[in-house]
Structure formats: structure tokens, C-alpha cells
Image (cartoon, rainbow, N blue to C red; front, side, top):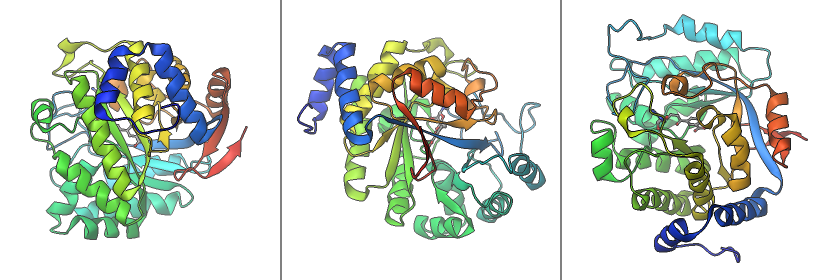
Amino acid sequence: MRSDERISPAEALALWHEAPLWLLGELAAGRKERISGDKVFYNRNFHIEPTNLCVFNCEFCSYRRPKGSPEAWDYPMEEIERIARSRAGQGMTEVHIVGGVHPEHGLDYYLEMIRRVKAILPEAAVKAFTAIELSYMIRRAGLTVEEGLLRLREAGMEAIPGGGAEIFDEELRARICPDKGSTAEWFAVHDAAHRLGIPTNATILYGHIETLEQRIDHLDRLRRQQDLTGGFNAFIPLKYRNAGNRMSQIGEVSVTEDLRMLAMSRIYLDNIPHIKAYWVMYGQTTAELALAFGADDIDGTIDDSTRIYSMAGAEDRRPSMTTGQMRRLVAAAGYRAVERDTFYNELHND
Ligand code: V47
């Protein structure tokens, strides 16, 4: 590690079992500093979550509601435009659009959604739809993944978020999200996107019933994909939160486990430039600590626009940080805050 050599899955397991927390932190922070120096990135973003109806029914999901539930929503296009308009003029550089996999909406509906958002916020990049949503809408339209992505790009989709990855191990996936789009589908979308020059992110959902071997296997599949196509911008370890879903009895892992997971992600994924500590999911305190364990990105201002994590038990019911708060958080951890756009161009450097 110290001479920047790649580690094997077996070495990763040994490191996980034998290294004390401080050593993982030292190795991960060292690698982070060789890649991004003393910079930690944030952006000005907000989410649009068009619906929580979903054809899939994952065991860990706290967000989905069945059709007819008083807590279900399915925004008409006018509501999506209203949300976009309410953010205009605030310097937003990214709109993150993700929701449930709606049973009826066709590809044309999503193309129209992107066009309308882009018409209202031309300066913001649209980072939209998980690979699972994309795979479903594109297949339903009878197109190849490549054809579908090209249409979406034409409409204004410029990047793809990392959700829907969960755990790649097929056996475990069959237990926690049996009917969801497969690992192969997830990779097919990211592979095609990278080949078309559309940058994407990747995630893991950890801290439930997966084994360490399955976590390392997940990282290994991403590292191999990145060797082939190089299109992943950031990796985001997502901590399983246990409120309001069918796996609640499992509990949540400790903060030291979170820090070990972040460090291992940075150590193992030597070819993905950014490791994101998504503050909405970790909370601000753990996100600040994460910067000493290899993370170099904390995501964005959010501005109370996502419910996925508050519904799953995250402390912050109405997640929002000003750029001033983000800069102070980064400075308190001893790093330099850099405002970025979706493509990691630097917009403001402390
Ligand atoms: O795919 C669902 C996860 C993801 C729970 O790309 C849960 O920049 C924890 O992918 N506990 C969606 N996690 C969020 C996501 C994301 C978030 C921020 C930034 C980016 C990015 C991507 O949320 C889902 C799933 O893995 N999730 N339920 C839960 N109970």
C-alpha cells in the first residue's frame, strides 16, 4: 500500500481483520492525499424524487409505498417543473433525479422530464436515474441500452448516479432484493454509459447481512469494471439504515465500522478518483470524521430535497447544509474545501 501497489482480495480481508482502525485511516488518508491532496469536494445540488411507487419491493427499502397508499406520491410534470423553478437563481450546478421504478411511465415521459428540468435550469447538470430505473425504462421502450442512453443524453442527461448497486453477490441479492434488476443489468448500464462518455458513480449498501467477503467481492467487481472503462467518478458506501423497512431487526453497524468501510473503499479502489461520504446518510459528525479515512467528497447542499434517508432513519429529518457550513465542516477536519461541478471541475477553491 505504501508504495501504491494494488492489493488483492485476500490481502484486503487480512487487512480488514488485522489492521487497527488508525492504520486503515493512515493508509487511506495517505492514498487520498496522493490523489486529491488536501482538497475535499462539495457541490450545490438538490434532488427530485418523482415517485415512491415502485415495481420492485426490496427488503431494505423504507421509501417505497404501494399504489393507493396515503403516503404514495407520483408527481405530475407540472409539480416537477414547480420544484425545478423553486431552485432557479440559487447557483445550483446539479439536479439529482431518482425515484422508484414506476410501473407505467415510458421512456418518453422521462425524456420530457429531463427536457423540462433542463429548460428551467440550463446551467445545472442533470444526473439522473439509477441503472435499475434506466434498464427498466429502456427495455420497456424496446431499445438497446446504448440506444436508450443516447436518447436520454440528447434530452439532457449528463451523468448517472450510483444507486441500485446494493450488493453484487447474486445469492445475497436474491435475499435482500429478489425481484430487483440484476447485477448484470447494473453493470450493462454503467459499461455502456462509460463507453459513450457519460460519467457515473457507484455505491454499495453495507452493514446488513452481507459478509466481508461479499463486500470485498463488490469492490473487486467495480475495480475490474473501472480498469476496462474508467468512467466511475465516485464511489459512495451507503450505510444500511434500519428504520421503517422489513430488515429493521438487524440494527445498524457502528461508526468505527463505517470508518473501516470508507478506508477500505479508498484502499481497494485504487482506480476510482473520489470516495464520497454522503453526509445525508452518515450525519454531519461521521461525514467530518470520514475525511480522515480516505473520503474526499461530502456531496452537496441538498436543501431538504431528499426523503430516502430520512424515511430510513437518518437523524436529519430535513437535510440541508449551506455552502458555509460545508466549508466549515471540511476546514474543521483539516482540509481545503473545493466547490465542484458534477464533472469535478473546480468552481471555488478555499
Ligand atoms: O440504491 C435504500 C440505498 C440508494 C436504504 O451517485 C438505503 O452521487 C441505506 O444511490 N438504508 C439511493 N440505504 C441513493 C444513492 C445515492 C445517494 C447520494 C448520492 C449518490 C450519487 C447516490 O439508497 C439505493 C439504496 O442502495 N438505500 N434503502 C436503507 N434503508
